[in-house]
Image (tube, rainbow, N blue to C red):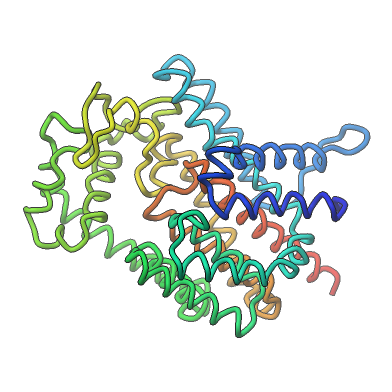
Length: 397
């Protein structure tokens, strides 16, 4: 694989690091997600064509299916033109598609990123501790903590594990966030409790079965949301119908959202609603249950607070199939060659980082928001690079 000169890769990785530091500055003001997406596109063009103009496609399943997602997204972008609400919301939703080009940064800078993070690790550890312990929003936003998980794992040594756990505990105590608890459970399960691919599939099946059963049992209560005046309905009334819904209002609110987008909209949602369109039925000037934003703003950009459900709602069953294939390939490769990845702590850290980001996406915005999308795609690109590296090492032996 051809490599960029070290000075260029360092600049690109530095941009990615700053993007993860605080998106209020580096994304909302300086548009680093868009910059990283553009860089990824340029890398794709640079490495995908030979000097004679012949298209080169790596023998990597994850790489191919990311391309399929980009092509599918572009198709939906065209189809959505006549049904979009307006150009503003259309371009806001397009970030779901063009952010995927950041994947090629991780894939093509797989080799260079190890040296970069080794040099920067002391600054990363110190910055992360200061940001979490002092809870300074100017240092790090609470929603970007997963990015620091991907960084502190770059040096997988005993002290790195201690720092990782300490940062997670500090965050959990400081912000009382359930999402970081989900990340801890996911990492421990993936790393220690599932020794084979079969065990991992069984664990996922049990989780899906239990969660799905609770969701189905909740449907009679979730149907009571509709008050005809607010975007999400009367969530407080739903909370009062059963003690379970008062345990965690954030999760209960998500249940209402998922019911409306998965069950209430079935089977129309199988093909997706496209981009630039409201994710829930349009109610002009309707307020949310606990916010005062008009529906014209919130219904188009909020997402379902499960990034994969959002992808399904926007792009339909075909996009969901693409992600299923991607995750199946990633997870199966890890467990099939577990000995290799365990002996290579750098590659192991890449897989664990991707698991951490995935866990966050199950209950939060990730792929659909420009504040975090590039982190997901770069992480997936590094995973694809690790798989390619494993194949190279195996063939060399």
